[in-house]
Amino acid sequence: MFDVIDSAKFGTLVEISALINSKYGDATSLLTQILESATRLTEGEASSLILVDRDTGKLRFEIALGPKGREAKRFLLNPGEGIAGWVAMHGRSLIVNDVDTDSRFYADISKSIGYPTFSILAVPMRVREETVGVIEILNKRQKKYFTQEDLDWLEVFSVQAALAIENARYLEKAQDEIHYLREKVEADKGWHSLIAQSPLILEKLELIDKVAKTDSSVLILGESGVGKELFAEQVHLCSSRAGAPFVRVNCAALPEGLLESELFGHVKGAFTDAVQNRKGRFELADHGTIFLDEVGDLPLKLQAKLLRVLQQKSFERVGSSDSVTVDVRIVAATNKDIEALVNKGEFRSDLYYRLNVLPIHVPPLRQRKEDIPALADFFLKKFSRETNKRFAGFTEAAMELMLSYSWPGNVRELENAVERAVVIAKDSRISPRDLLLGAVAVETDEYRGKSLKEALIIFKRHFICKALEDNRWNQTETAKILAIQRTYLSRLIKELDIVNSKE
Image (cartoon, rainbow, N blue to C red; front, side, top):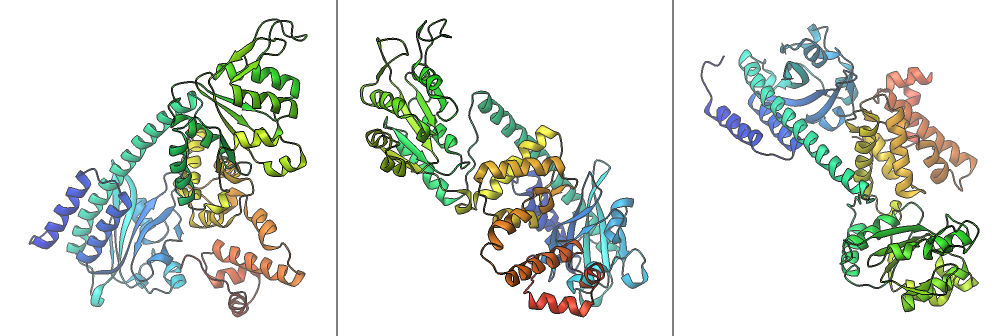
């Protein structure tokens, strides 16, 4: 195999092997290091680590190094397409020192990104007889030819990369199982996972940690769908009452008569259907926490009774004159402008001040975009398990769309969008068309307040940009699809300031 073992190359192999055999947590960094080493030791100018999608057979550029690496990552190869596709399909290595003489060479990518390719070294990555990907080295430096020794070394590196991928899959599967079991246990107890990456939310969680140590009332404010209930849960779970009940009540879900009985209970004979004594939610929450969601919808009569509970910690069941004493912490939430309700006389000012001892405002999702990737990934894994479908993640375009969208329905809307995408998606990665957000986002944000001329310019920009994306930014192919001249398309791209965001 090797006539003489190069000590530097051997040392590189030992170093990477040690990383693979350790519990190396960042698979992408490790694979990048393997690819960098392989490129350096085979004296290539550029390189790619290409993974095969198990479901579609398409090849995706997971890592791409070199002058045009970023541009190359936006392409997908069909099964068997190009040198890499042939290697993946046949599970055999190739040396091609003159691509122009090899019919398997797929020139569209090189032409599209403006990077001429002269020679290619490609080897399969195999895990348990399965080809999981291909390592490809482009253009031997100083216009030399790739040799059999280069191929032998690259095959050794491909074995290392395959091991790293296998380890990453195993760890990911194990971590997913652990997360799933933890989430299931918490869900069985009624708890939700709170996903947070943004400084705004992390700051709120720090505040909750301090607030939870007291028994004062908490008022959580925020738009519908921001996750106010999750923050209420955190107040309870971080408090000394965590071992006691956490009782939830939606004040907008029941009419006044039923809501009073639901909150405070009733005695037998209090009304027609009261066939026996029944404890209310406040009694069930004794020594724990009661969460009053949509408290802004609480009728005025019940507001007076709630105020008494806050002040005296006692109340009477419906139909009874006997006082019931409870030790309950109240956490309330509303998406309404409660101060405006107070000014209109629709909400008691004295109750508002008693509830608003420790206010927490949960910002809308559009103000904490750092949370979007983490939330989207969480929901993707959740619904992938539920539908028994497997996804590699989101495309860059899909993530860009989610980050640019205004999310009027906040986290709840994001969850619904990902669930919908999981159901309808056909590829291994969720794309913008799966999310069904583009038209809504454009309509709500970009066309509002625009003249017809301005709106037409926006439409043209989106229409042409989408056509370019569908054709991998190949302007010749895009012009054919649009039935216009290539030079006219080029002029439109310049006039409309269309830029490939992935470059």
